[in-house]
Image (cartoon, rainbow, N blue to C red; front, side, top):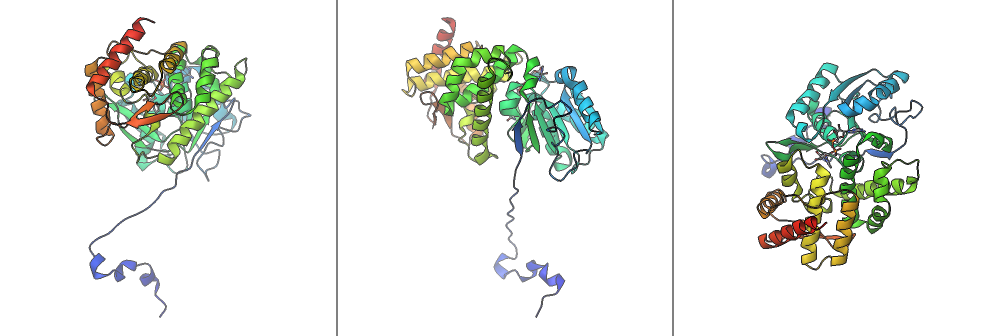
Length: 398
Ligand SMILES: NC(=O)c1ccc[n+]([C@@H]2O[C@H](COP(=O)([O-])OP(=O)(O)OC[C@H]3O[C@@H](n4cnc5c(N)ncnc54)[C@H](O)[C@@H]3O)[C@@H](O)[C@H]2O)c1
């Protein structure tokens, strides 16, 4: 007998006795987003920003631009001119951003702006333009508002370009804890334009170089050599792709962005807790928050990497020559290798906190030579104490 429409849409009617009071729900949701490295995205003739809308949405859809106040000062007019030239109705929400403002209050400000704008969460993207702090705050707000509003990310700092802007993690600080609340919310598009780096100050560029150095140390020996040869020059030239360092800037950016995406893609939701990209992020969250606002994110990461290099050396994973090369490069990139707050008490407490968040095991990535890494689970308090003291000594002796 041919089933009636009601029967064919009601398979639950035929469930067997054993499975009538037990259910399993399984669903998968594909994630796909484009990350494009381009030049001159604020030039009205450049279609990159125009096309940066969710699939199926017309390029002229309204935009809510949420922008870091410094970025607004330098480029706000160019963003609005761009939208006007393409007849795109837009509104702007300006946020003051640094690590001390990376909290719920700023998320709330964005949520209120979304409400005021009356955003159509299926057809009107938020355009987030700023550094890691703004991208984390707006990504978090976007993931909460109506359970998910599309975000186009336009990173404007080096950390944003090579790290904070290209993955799916969002988060803000909570009760003195770094990134303690957050979500996974993939951007619809990511548009990377190194021209924004022209106005980033030297210390913040150096800060971004720490995340690039991380990618080099754990998996890309060629990237390490490029930083060794051109790092100081790239810092001085602000990574611009039009001068003497053009080729090096392009290769360093492409290798670090590509390397990061290769690492993130197979483990987007971090179901595996062994992530080499956590290198430099085991002790640094506690250090960064305790030293706030003195240490920037990448600076805390650099100190963590220096300490991990010494732990690796003591275990015979890194030679003394390799360790000197690594520390020398950190100095050339104007990154710190130690901090007075880096006591054994802090290191022990930081590793305890990290271990709790890594499923009860340290899963501590340590370098193996330059360009490879392995995980260890058995670093003890004495090792931390010795490494901390050696690092302070090395820092003192320049
Ligand atoms: N979600 C992630 O996966 C991820 C990854 C890495 C880092 N992060 C987060 O990123 C944050 C650090 O990001 P950041 O270093 O970009 O800091 P930031 O966002 O605080 O920006 C640094 C400073 O530069 C200014 N600025 C931004 N763009 C500018 C420009 N083009 N010209 C002039 N000034 C500009 C900002 O106003 C700010 O004062 C940390 O909170 C870290 O936790 C997140």
